[in-house]
Amino acid sequence: MSLPDGVSRHDFDGTTSIATRGHPEYGERTDGEWRRWDPHRSKLGAMLELGMETGLTADQTTLYLGAAAGTTVSHVADFGGPTYAVEFAPRPTRDLLDVAERRSNLFPLLKDARKPETYAHVVEPVDVLVQDVATRGQGRVATLNRQFLADDGYLLAAIKARSEDVTADPEDVFDEVLADIDAAYDVVATERLTPYHDDHLGVVARPER
Image (cartoon, rainbow, N blue to C red; front, top):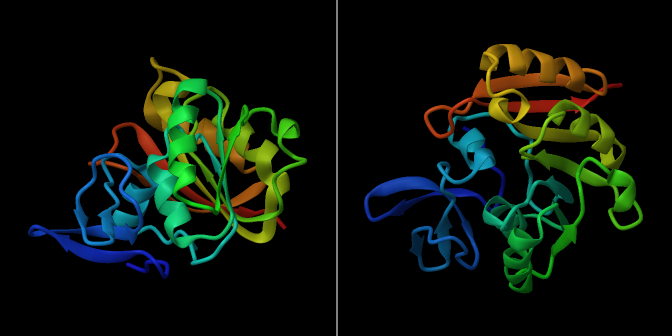
């Protein structure tokens, strides 16, 4: 498995896991300056643990959609460059602000990922677009935010089947969302995120040329 600089496999009391260096934020195990990147709490962490080639690199500029309280985006900011974190709900955004106080490169935005025009004046072109939004129209969210992604960048999306349709077969939902993503991207890899997250699909895509 290829890991970006700044992410390493580390031993935590006999358990080996991916980890970053930074301030702990969600009760994760720590060892000195290392903090475990818990794949059960992070879809992107699950993608890395499962060996998906994400294209992540150190010091990249990132737009993170669906940052919630900052669990995953805190790890991204640990090894990345400027990191813009979009979250719609005010309550988790308050926790996200606390996370950002400890990371000068993390910029929280209380915005709706379905309305990128509301933050287009703030976000610079990015190297990677990470998406973890619990909403209908996840494929459309990815295509709407394509405008921020460099032509040689990566979309890393965690598609949640139950957010689209709680009654449909997850595989059918994934096919529909991927069809929407195909409008603006070339999908290069997909993988179910079990055993870490049920009914989720990890997606790696590149901007369509």
